[in-house]
Length: 138
Image 1 (cartoon, one colour):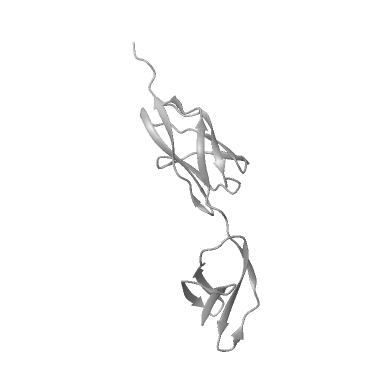
Image 2: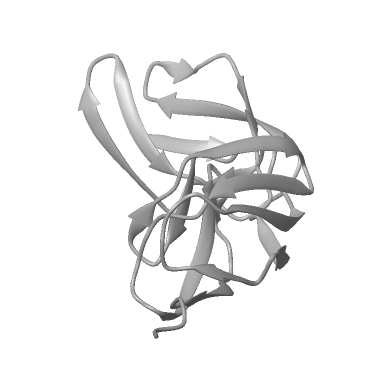
């Protein structure tokens, strides 16, 4: 048995049951037909669409208080299908505005820099730095 996408075989696949196969797609872009070949023949094709990896190009504001609640705008590309926004390892509530723009509510954390990342079905972005600043003490 082989699992393939177009004319390229999947680098690996696992038969989970008589009705389910898990496959790692070969590198590609756009949309391709996925088929399975067995001694009994070739399956009908099912379309598979590659999703580009997301990229962060910046955020604004780049700093805020250690308390939660600051709305941070994340800029980049491939953000339409955002599934999570993390400030370090802490998930943040977010709203996807467009492919190039997501807003997130910064969670509370200690003073200092924290890496912000966005995850989509295409992968996880590079990080952008958000710096939490402690309130001045008297």
